[in-house]
Image 1 (cartoon, helix red, strand yellow):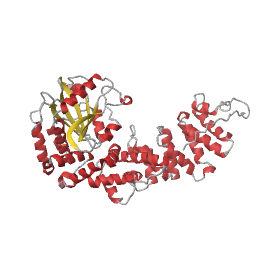
Image 2 (cartoon, rainbow, N blue to C red; image 1 turned 90 degrees about the vertical axis):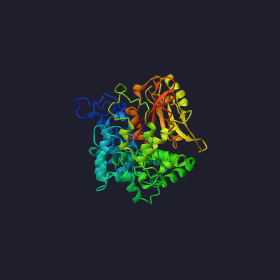
Image 3 (tube, helix red, strand yellow; image 1 turned 135 degrees about the vertical axis):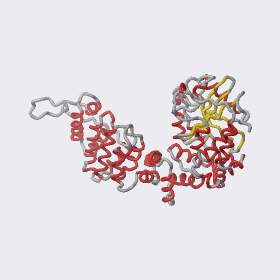
Image 4 (cartoon, rainbow, N blue to C red; image 1 turned 45 degrees about the vertical axis):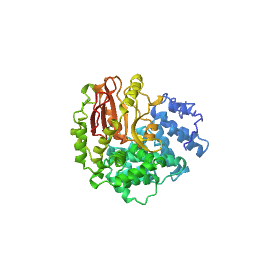
Length: 496
């Protein structure tokens, strides 16, 4: 744990020769001087030396310097100087205490001046044990800097010569769990490592290879990922998907897991290509309710879906709705980008949204949304009840909590929604700012970003006419967005 010791020693030193006043020597409150604006940056750095020199004991000196290093308002140059003094302190000759402090400090650190300086020190001194926190920093998107041009990348490459960055990140993910606060830090580093791999290993192929090569690794996180890869044929690509896998592996979802595993195992090889976690529930549902669908080829499923959509009235998001240029919402234009599991998933969703009574339920929820200008509403579509038994598909509403209401054009999926809907079919929300909102039918750019990060099947319901008529758009990944046409009174029944 970091020290919260404060610097309270007064610094009032005479200036040799007396020819001019030393403003640093006039300071009587070291801490206030460092955080304030009365001294220049160079003067503050000199003040750090005086703080160190004025400490009563070597240990008090370290505590004072740690406090300076931790205080963001001191400025990065003063903080870096304090870090240098700590790193060179004879009291910590092997650097163990300094590295332990930096392993905590660097995790949430936003100041590039401090980050780059610690990277330089780590590279110069071979501080390999800072690898997890350096990966955690690298996982944060660089503003206008490519990953390979960042200081974190350079130091990690130097600390692990000849090792690809994907492997370095995966080893952080696969590291044994610690205890206490170290366990919490390790978990954050683990999640960050997976997020970094999202950028470095977009299709998951390297992670599949690492999983195979580390088959005897006992880390719980490895067990979860290994299980989903072996039994559901998928690898979580983002940190959000990794969290989703852990939810699916909970004891309360064991029955669902067994059913999904069995259904996936029975698929022909062609159907297993490109499987993602979002495909597991559509496959499980189809095995129980439409088993013939699982024997169809991708082309046959596409023909069935195309036939269901034939003649439906589509409401394509126009330029006036913003986010233009995202690509077509027509099924025919999206099919070339869809694997077998994608086509099946859209087919199951189309069946779900035409479940008798669901349009009326959605209309009541959309009216609540229209009357609430603080947020968009949403929830998840699922067929399983609290006992884990299958029934008709239902729209389960989870209105955002007061702290998650940012505007009438934004929906935030709560942790409760994602946990309770872990085995659900799809997450949905409304574009119901008004009762005829066709101009905004379809996902926004932010909606697509969420789908890509979460890995979930997503639906947006947009009121297009009074009387509970909605346009239905399905979207997932960063490429597919399909308009399924209208539901509700006057909409297509979907009963084909």
